[in-house]
Image 1 (tube, rainbow, N blue to C red):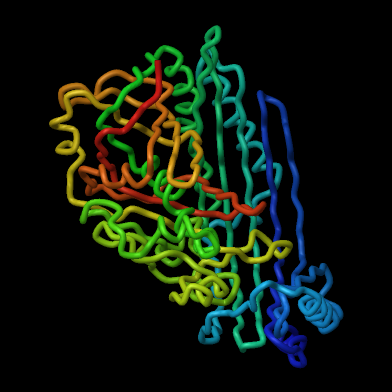
Image 2 (image 1 turned 90 degrees about the vertical axis):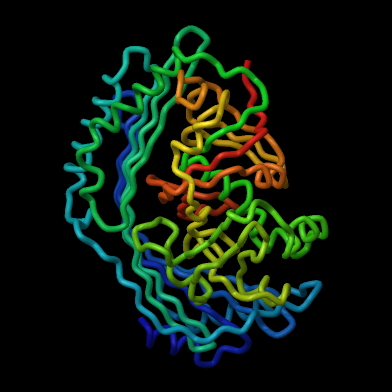
Length: 455
């Protein structure tokens, strides 16, 4: 493949890159005891992206490797036909030459669709039998194995293999007008075995939904809260990570003022990172991005101060900042755009017991069940919560919705735990009509004066 791509680029003018993807996948979904979907397939395709002098981005897709030279010509013609308001420049980067192989222990491709179906059907039965008041259940399985080949006119080449396995379950319970939900998911980058032996965990999802029916609705007010690592990770990804994507910032004067480097965002103990290399097992680990830029550990907040943001080659050039390795495309059908990989609040020093010890009345918020952000304002629903009374975890509460201003909330962080974890399960982040596999992590976080909606 290397020589084939190199030959296709020999006579290209301007900047040109070729991305080819070869993937296999299977998926199974159950809904309320019935098969909702079962499928398996393969896909091969690619794209040529070209930037001629004075032109815009030209993009051509293909599903055959024949006549690649012709596809390159078409992309260059498309680029010349576009007249951008400002010339597009790309940050300079050293050529890469790397092959990233998937570390596979138990390959899902070696397990039959019938075996996968049997496992998911059994989980569906476990979930539906886990509580009496369940009214809706879903159990979903998916696996994929892909090879991405990349080459450009600057001499870069990479091959990146990736395997993903996902099991996800959801349950909804009802008592009159009271409807509550539970959910969980498990992923692996290396082994099919990770989706086995999850019967107790699957049952727990249905039991949480059922238990929430009997929980009291949290009383609306302003509380000191403890975010568990998963909710804290989702919070920093959604509320802060997206604001750090440079394509949102470079053409927006308000955003540039808001995200001015050197601005204090939190206590000196607060450190936020973005790292596409940190652990091979994480969904967001890509090692090299879809423009051929090597990923690295990037500090966004260091000692409470905003010190960085994430870039592709175009935004880094326009803003005069370092490349970070954050250009990602969902597939060969999509152009790479600025996306997060693995985003996290780094570990602190405070044990969980000390974090709650002096809280007279607070809320322990667990897991995430969606939310929304509008610039610096946010609203997040915890999966569920528990009241904290006199330094101890008390009764379960439901409808825990956290609201506030991001910058004020970060400044109100009082303690960062010493129990950092990367969140388990599947994370898919949407932006610009594309999905990207991501991970997020954090220790427990204590924040004062958080507004929680409720009764």
